[in-house]
Length: 110
Image 1 (cartoon, rainbow, N blue to C red):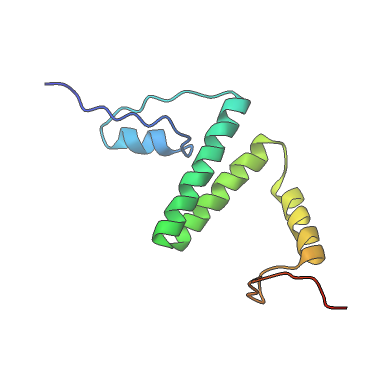
Image 2: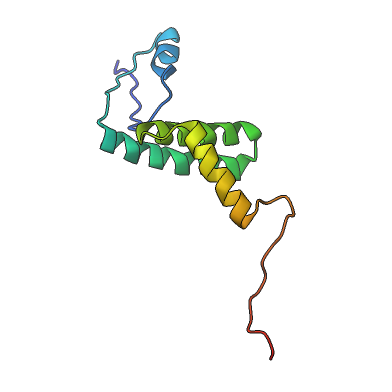
């Protein structure tokens, strides 16, 4: 009888291999170089966003943030540095608390 094998080829969280092994299965993993892993994380970001848009669960937003934190770490940016960038941008452009939706922009009448 042939063993069941599922191919994933995607970025995973650090503890996933141990979780898989605990179920009695074997996980085959590799450590990617920085550039390759950056690409995998970008793909993971899209995957997690799709899951959030499909399911709408807050847990999916947590997964999105975790991938963002992974991208930051990989690119040498601390969470504190990132937060400072976010705050500065919010000070200049605002946040989303007013729930504004831009419908149209037109020339002003003179």
